[in-house]
Length: 572
Image (cartoon, rainbow, N blue to C red; front, side, top):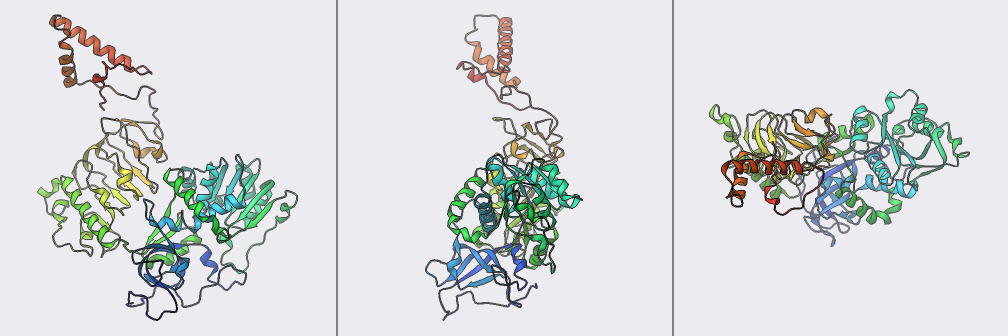
């Protein structure tokens, strides 16, 4: 596998083509284990081998540049088989699927909503025929297919255990994907004993992804009438002398069903799969992660990582293309302009190196002019498309920055170690839907007074989150409780998991009466109490306020219209 400069190509479907064709600009390419099998001439394969010297072929998401097929026009976003190259001429466009753009990342059409997701759906529901309460084991569970199988099993009411090759992946399975348990198979000297430990009553369903010794150990631990869906055997890929299976006889006395399958045989189920998966993803019931490699030059390393254990999860290659070149470019520029206006940069008085002076938007053009700005990383040096904003430890001040929703493709935001203050945005999930790394630590961020708690942050790609050392208040949302406790320390008002500080069970209105509020109350009650002397006014008012506060701290609501004007939600 080598990267080759193919030179300039005309961005038109060639005249005189044998039939309708489509020219596409590739946006995302998928790294899949099945491709390893195409690198050798294996007569029993369901797909032909690659031809030496030809372009690597795989699944991708692309934008149509030119078309002579009546079903496609320039600008359409499609998924299907394409080449590992910047531009591909598709001479069988009927195999392409149009993508209706939505709030789901385009790359997910190669994973969650693509072949891996469909494989998981077919294998689990059609091959395994699951029943609620059954015991399910998934090997290679952090991979593109495995992570989805485990979540489908949990949605179905099963007990799920997964295996992976690193401790990081094991934690990911439990914390991100909701597996009941997981283990690092490399740290288990006896796989049979390990499975017995996790499944003392045996395994009902095994979703097979690795083969070899793991399959042998599983066979000894299967329950009566168990089912095994054979999706792949990644541990055997490339072996000239694959390991044999010694415990196949277990199939007979235990009446085990073991079946291999190919997802394309069930293509009639794809529409219902798409509806099912889209709904559950949008409802927050299915999480998904992908390992994104940037640039075709990194494709070989990404592919090797699938088999060496280097890939964290699903492998995807971003081809550094912009499917809405001008739209994304202009919005990202405006994002930085709005952000700059909302910042206070004290360093401008001391030197000429920081944001206010370095972010100069004069004559930036469309070819990466913003990529040299302090703290800005772009998807490509010649494209005004923000990948990351790393503005940590710059001494910046101001409220939570404005305009971030215009950096539509941003994956990292680091504002740590500054002097930002004021409430966090309540719409972070909508503003930055693709952010994986979010660091807001060591500032003075607070929460809005009308709800007095940390806003819910539901970011499906979030891998790292840190708000330590701020002025945040209230219970930590469920969506953030999987992150380490250290990432929430230094906020005296935060409570709940993962902190070792329980939230008090009381009515969710904190009443903090400040002097200005007391003065307002006095004005309101002066008229009905005008016959009472000054001392009585003070005593009666103080008693009224004290009684009101005590009443609201009891765990039941007061439905009194006359008391409503005196309800204040203030965070101290």
